[in-house]
Image 1 (cartoon, rainbow, N blue to C red):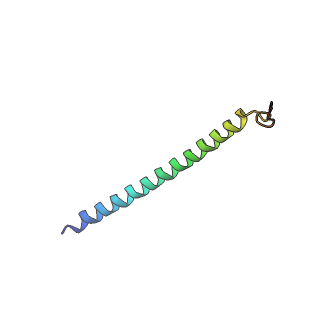
Image 2 (image 1 turned 45 degrees about the vertical axis):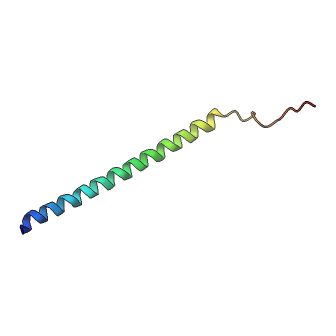
Image 3 (image 1 turned 90 degrees about the vertical axis):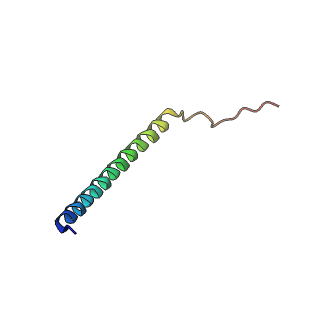
Length: 58
């Protein structure tokens, strides 16, 4: 068993895991910003007067 090679491989795995976690966190942050921007655009696109009154003819 090659202990130095095993130690190097485990260190690389730890680094890759940390990089993947950092990327996932960054993606989650980006998605949160995108969702907030989408909600803001939906709120501003809706006319506040539409849907408040219903005309009924009998």
